[in-house]
Image (cartoon, rainbow, N blue to C red; front, side, top):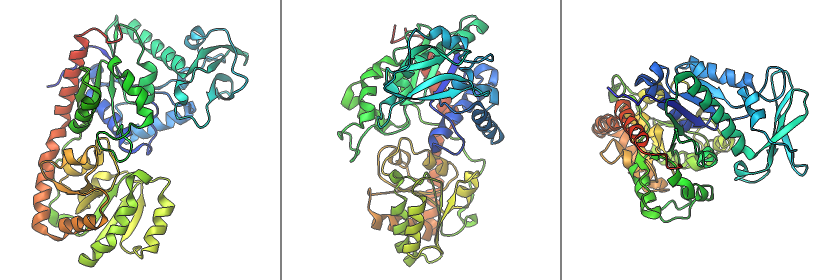
Length: 464
């Protein structure tokens, strides 16, 4: 049985909102549940800390939704910075006032004032328009007093976030006698802002969820500009968790091995049983992803015209929501596919969708781990995927699906036909998929994470 070291555990995410952020949110919540199952905090799991400036009522509603879907252990294990930034008497909480220094908001900037439940201002956030690096601004964040007047400022979002983290950690230490604190950061932006957190009792583990490269996404392709600064800070983390060996290897080849890079994929429980091909809906192909440009759902729609020439009863059900919905619906109609291709919206039962499907299809231009591929494989659903970094090739290395040359819609259609039209081929791929999925069994993944925690706690903080 996996045992984690006796420590306080925090998981940091910029935001967690039901039905937003796709596999990213599901991976974070799954990690927390799996840590709870391994006994962290007596089975209550790590604290999940979020930083989005929504209202306390919004955050309470989000927590209830997660709890009703059994995605969290309990609503008390999720906390938000801005829920805790207000003083019941008005203005900012004591921990935030203590962190503030004399000063005023920048008169040249627009500010978003965040109020408490009574409408009283507590924090004023500088609005940095059109800058993807808004989070590293040193523009003053306004801290309000009980009378609604500015009582001081903190220097940028970094100082605001670190002040709250220090407050949370101080409270944990006061309650437990000074255990070490292990922080698992799930967000690049948060990671950049806390990389210099010098508390010697804190260990920072950073988990990566996406690709770091620009098109054409080859190992030597230009870095995504948002990641350039992060790589200059990577050695400050006590461990960095990559989702695939391919991405870790490419990073080490390009940037060197700082001794912090590990591969720990997201864990996905195996299905209690795999639905036989004979009990699935013949010819049904499904997609589960955001309707976003990078998912290239239009490739799947266009390819399906050729699929129907060989398999006239085939259908494509596309689950998800996003900005591309209207354009994709127009494409379905213009291609004359409304009888066979449908946008189904968000599903609250992806397991049922996958159990009924003859194949799972993904046409993404890039991935981090491609969690949906793993979820399909654990249920024995064969996968058809473009051969893109990172994830599909790792998952399908031992079978369970078909890799298609990136962007080749003709080959994509042929692969779909191959999987759904040949019962023997389908049965073989289904068996392989279920077998390959054992690599991401939660017990195995959680044991690897527990070992990583043991290792970082055994060494001094890399920021000391």
